[in-house]
Length: 233
Image 1 (cartoon, one colour):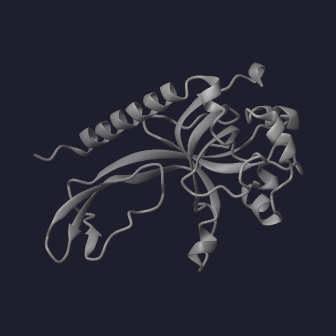
Image 2 (cartoon, helix red, strand yellow; image 1 turned 90 degrees about the vertical axis):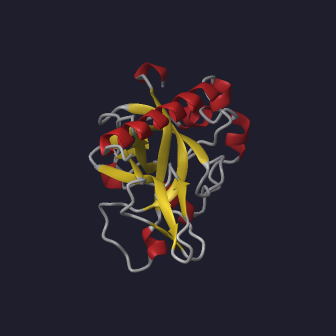
């Protein structure tokens, strides 16, 4: 029996809530969070590898990048044998890597989608270098590793100067994707995001002929996030 799209959407929201609650519990203590690399910090690998779990204390600069639908559960069919399988994926924009003769059955009633809201987020304006290093959890290592990014890597992680409140100041930026049931925070809200790093596409830029050049915009797929009060900065 095929259930309605709303019921399937509710299923994915319930799953998303379970994942968020689980990881909030796992990283519920400060010392647990400190083991996660900080996005944009100089004491982590200059260019994070896609799939890396990271955290990013950021301010929502532009929450109006819209909504996206992600195919979380895909029905696969083998064109040679007719065999049917399911493939699950989340916290990524990359489609499933398929073996020979396998393809996604995009018209299948078994496909399930989840919504995600996209926001342009930047490192907190005015936060001092000392405070930024302190969020790494190992101040000594942070100080030893200052300024190790190459120019190319720094350009990758640095956001548009025109979109930053403090013009001309270097900062980190990323498109952060908030999965249902979470909603994207409001503009100027400060949040701690824990999510999966990936290089993706900026929906507001013209596509390039070279796909590798296209997929260079840093994204964080939020597993969970917590609101940060200004007083705690």
